[in-house]
Image 1 (tube, rainbow, N blue to C red):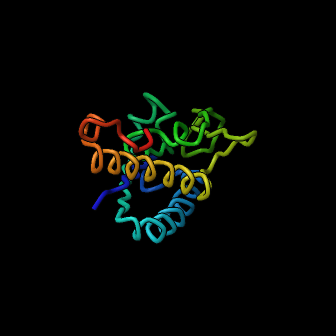
Image 2 (image 1 turned 30 degrees about the vertical axis):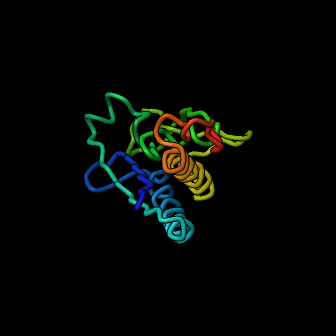
Image 3 (image 1 turned 135 degrees about the horizontal axis):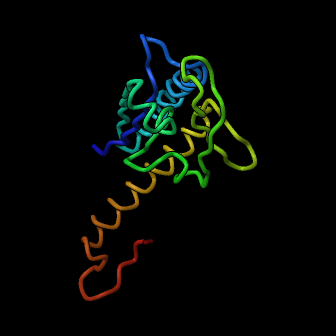
Length: 151
């Protein structure tokens, strides 16, 4: 079975996180549930890894908080977005925290639909790679003829 790995990290200070990371956590749970249901028929499992950033790690690079990766690529890469920053709250102090911009919107908390879209794109890439290798081999050729699989 193939696996879609979703990794999310956020600042945790004295057991607390900021409101935007708290909202992202709720949205992420919804997205993971939907992705699991959608990808099971394709033989793809979904694993969610949650990592905590310490205050010192956060202070070194605040934009690493509330960051999501899918199969080792940032969410923004999958959805044609970009990351930005904005002031957050007292848990984060004076640091500006990560935002995601896509299709004219800027999101402080990452909505489930963006995670689902990125997850489906990441899953489709792994299915496409598997299909090419299974029918054409790792070189993309099928015997003396050219491979018929899309690249």
